[in-house]
Length: 92
Image: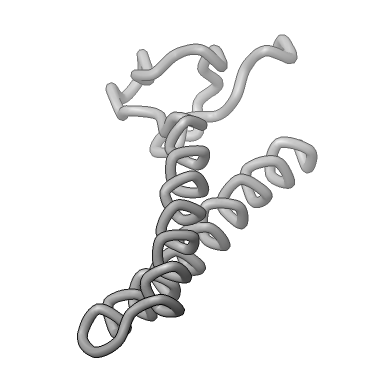
């Protein structure tokens, strides 16, 4: 099996790394851009949430804290998902 192959998320058959659909089971393979999008969206939410939480009062401060928590979760979740994928590739 060449090094430029990964295993399908559903059927675990080897597929090329650039394949978005598995030729065996037709399952859509996850894109690494999703991880990047989660982290970038999370960082944006954190920054916007900090601004709202610090510089406003009332309900918009609550929205700021909510965005802060949501952004933190998205950032950490996206980065953890990336690390999990890297460790599973290294374990093969």
